Image 1: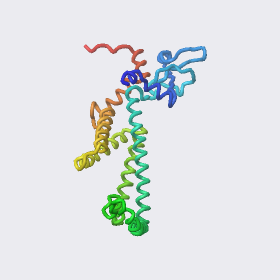
Image 2 (image 1 turned 90 degrees about the horizontal axis):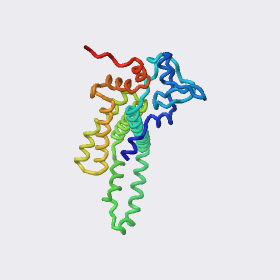
Image 3 (image 1 turned 60 degrees about the horizontal axis):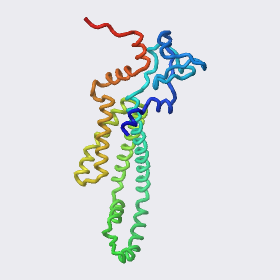
Length: 264
């Protein structure tokens, strides 16, 4: 599997999904370096995957105005974070539906309580024959406890679920649009819930809780490390400089300019 991904080109994958990025610089010498003549016309080198593609460039202008295309390792990191963004949006949508469900339950709680008090005693004889005491049966006690919750408490529960849903959706939108504020929100919001997850594990260790804690720790570390948040590894300037170093246009422009003279 490691050897397979060693030859995997994230740039080609993204170009196959979103299309190539073709740019024609107005500088003649630079334009010659990123284009070739073919029997079918001029082929321009894609700024993402570096493949030569026959067709009209998407835009024309000075080299300094060329789009700074995410490619290489930064593109791989962006795809991983976008997968995380999808998970955030899906979870946020589910939490929104849960808030609606709790709100509807609040309004119909008395009707459900009447049904519960009516039908549980009717089921008691059959349950007794199977050796089950419904008065102490776990699920029945849980439902009874939920039905007895104070309406004001349910209102606070709804508010907390809505806020959590909004936070998840904001994370998803920010990460998908590759905004730096979205990366900060995701890192901080995920970190805030880690102490609660540790507290849950202290109370009772389950593989689901342990897995969730490990996953969130890895996600926080991955976002902070790869995106150089909070000034780590040079901060945002180092991140931008790395993207410029990967730029096809800037690599070719540097090749034309030649090596910088050594400082005396």
